[in-house]
Image 1 (cartoon, rainbow, N blue to C red):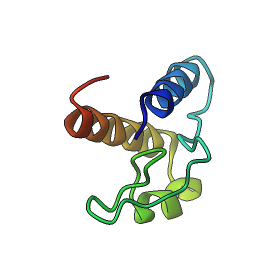
Image 2 (image 1 turned 135 degrees about the vertical axis):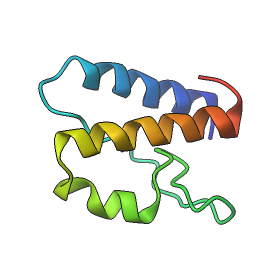
Image 3 (image 1 turned 60 degrees about the vertical axis):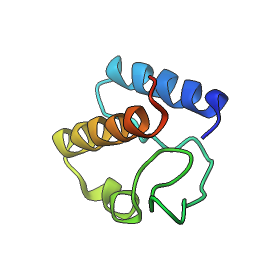
Image 4 (image 1 turned 120 degrees about the horizontal axis):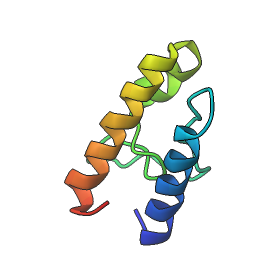
Length: 78
C-alpha cells in the first residue's frame, strides 16, 4: 500500500470517529493482495468486505481496529 493510500485511510478513520455511524474504510482501491488476502486499499478480507453492510456499529468499529492493526503490522507505521 502506498503512503498516500495509508494517509487516505487514516483520514477516513479520523473522520469516522466524528460521525454518529461508523464509515466504511473503502478508499476505492479495490485490489486483493494474493499473499495476505487483504484489500490493498482498506486491509479488509473478502469476508469482512462482504459482511460490512450487515455488521452492527460495534462490529464495524471492531473491523476498523483489525484493519488498522494489519496496516501497522504490515507497514510498521501508522
